Image (cartoon, rainbow, N blue to C red; front, side, top):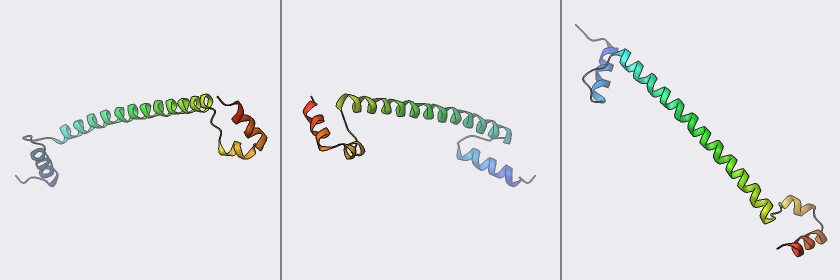
Length: 91
């Protein structure tokens, strides 16, 4: 009995991963399991990145408030008197 092209590919893949043989059903089930695991890990990564972004934004807001940083745009709008007063009142 001659093997079909699909059967040959399955046999080659089984050899490649170090097992005696694999059926199409086993390959599909394995692929589904890997996709399910990968989907969860992507969700976990996205959640972790969102938490990190939120934390960075909160830290930046605290730094700006506590350290008295002024944006370039704000400085452009201020008069020399306002800038002098701001420097004089700085800690």
